[in-house]
Length: 443
Image (cartoon, rainbow, N blue to C red; front, side, top):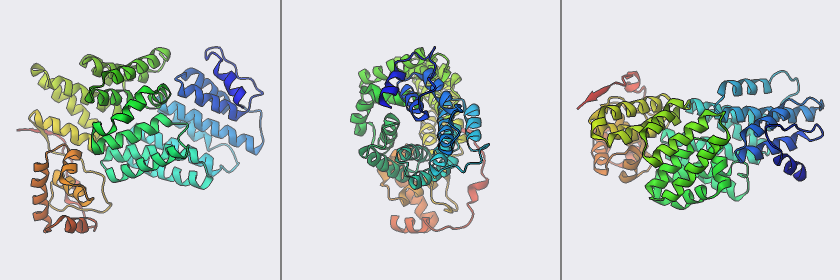
């Protein structure tokens, strides 16, 4: 198989025809190799050929073909074609009387979780990814486990559940040591880096950012699978004053876009990264317009808002951009990101009435607490210090202490331990459930 894959990798994508004698597994592996190298057209042609070959009618052959269709659907989803990818995935599990294996079901379920993440349906991500992990464990499909844990780490991080995100990041580290991450090494490395950066700051992950941006293999695989990573890496590198690393990301994002002009999400990714590097708000706003992924679009709007806020004559435009970011973050349940943007809006003299509720224990109620007090109580009940709570909510330690005193008084508790014990018990319906206003109030 190695020699077959090597011969495929040398073939030009534009005029390539797959020999019929090659096995389906060989074609899938070659497609994955093309994907990781950023040769998207070649990847798609190989994936489509493997998915629609009809020369093996045995039960095993049909199973291989259906796995190929899941891979084809996954590629379409990652390229932003959610409609076609969803249709392809639906066809995978219908029209064949053969009972699908746990491996096939695991791959299909994890693809469904990727679709949910792209749509910003974080609760669906958790449900599908956890189910996919259980199926993969039962099937012994170890190389599928990192994908499920990456999706869970990213959704937990967006929801502000740092305990869960940390757990999945630790599991990804174990997967890497065991060699299970070989198909998505860049994506797994980025998920771990995101979680650690959110928990401990950019300086704590400087070595990881350097490793990802300096390793072309890791970086290409990541940028193809998750174009929004380009802007994140540039932003992180600039925080570390590592412009050489940021330049590497911009260079590779631009190269992917030029080599794959049919895919606008790669162009938007390159524009966003270049806009951050060159301090060009125009590039970032164009990237926002071109981006369909809601989290990536919110990220672009946030960066544009922050850049505009530094210009005294552009304060209204800054508020408008940051408001667009909050709307998208709110729509997809990205609580942690929304807290960060709300903090900047407060600096600009604008306060949102609605603050997102962090992902917490099912059934927890806060009674008379405000949204910010609820968030403080949730994080303190998980054992976080005031300093770490402040970092999560983008407020000062003194502000955390102020809100915590109000939480103690309103819930009639006298210590953090008592709060944690009280918080874990359901206490009836949350009276804030009927609050739906998301308009603004100027100080």
